[in-house]
Amino acid sequence: MMRYEGKMDTLTLIITIVGIIVAVAVAIIIYYLQKRHGVREREASRKQIEALREEIRMLKEGQKEFGIYLNGIPKVRERKKVIRYSAGIRAMREYDYTEAISKFQEVLDLETDDSERCALLNLIGESQIRSSAYKDAEQTFLEMIRIAEKAKIEEALAAAYGNIGLVYKTLGEPKRALEYDQRALEIAEKVGNPKIQAIALGNIGNTYLGLEQFKEALSYLQRAREIYVKIGAKHKVEICDRNIALVKKAMGEGG
Image 1 (tube, helix red, strand yellow):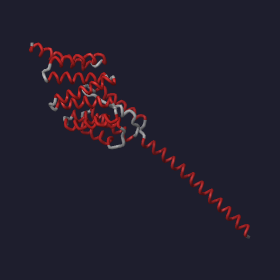
Image 2 (image 1 turned 90 degrees about the vertical axis):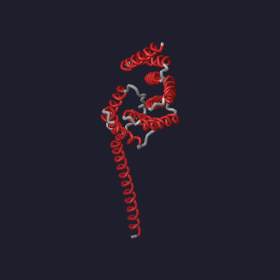
Image 3 (image 1 turned 60 degrees about the vertical axis):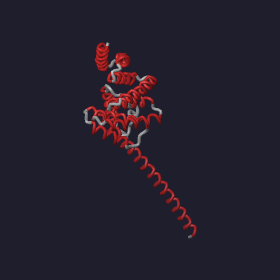
Image 4 (image 1 turned 30 degrees about the vertical axis):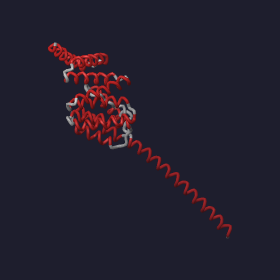
């Protein structure tokens, strides 16, 4: 009788152990299935990512006067970010800057790295300039400068310097505008970004034109024009030609 009970105890133990192993295995399978499904839920679809890339392409093509840094955005794959970026950039193109700022701020409140934060601040600051919120734009670009300097992201720094230079020019602070535009020019030349170089040169030239320092204005505007010709920016070449004509006319009148 004792031997029989011992066999039963052993069998019960084996059954218990097997049951535990099966339960653990099932739990592990369920965990990984849920995790895999969760990743699919969090990641944007290929169509959504391609739509965002197209929005970025159209935004870049539409840039005329702003230095823009977007390097941190193409790496984004998280679904909720991709959706908000696309909506924000689309709102910018449709001149709904309040909506654009709202969408970019929502992404900014999520976890982002320094490069992506700089890109977001660039988009927010540009939207603020376009909606005439210049003081807000000033603070936005100062924050972008702080992050870019700390993280040593030179292209972001060049864009931020150029944009805040435009803010100060608009606010009637030409000396501060020239200071930041010169910084933008130096970095853009260092990293080899011709578009930001040309924008900085044009901004400096226009600031000197406003200060009636025509010799300096002519020099910078001509340098900007040369770069715009090389990169095929016909619209900007035409703007430079008009401003150069104004400078030459003023110099002629002064002579």
